[in-house]
Length: 83
Image 1 (cartoon, one colour):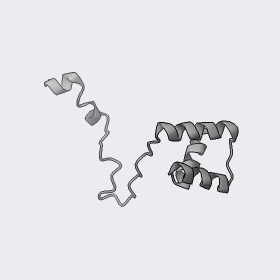
Image 2 (cartoon, rainbow, N blue to C red):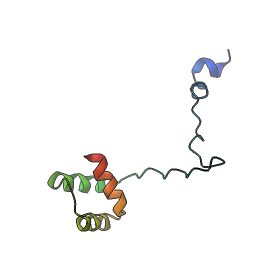
Image 3 (cartoon, rainbow, N blue to C red):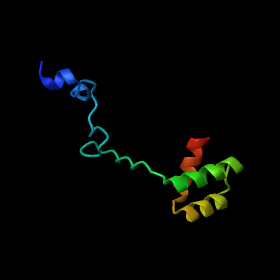
Image 4 (cartoon, rainbow, N blue to C red):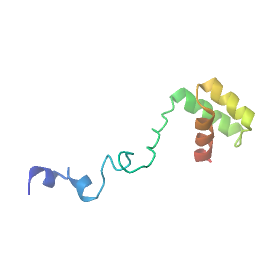
């Protein structure tokens, strides 16, 4: 047994995980979009708005997204995940 095997660094190979398993190369599937990382300020504003209003109208969502420099879809998804 080599050093890598004892230290567990090959665990990802044994479990079948590959960092490229979600790649679109050669499998014809669309690659996943990178996860959005919100700033602390954006999270504070999203949380404060959510505390006041659990559901946003389309117009409110668009206004909030524009104010925060995010897309409408990013705000919509954050709200869906938060509920």
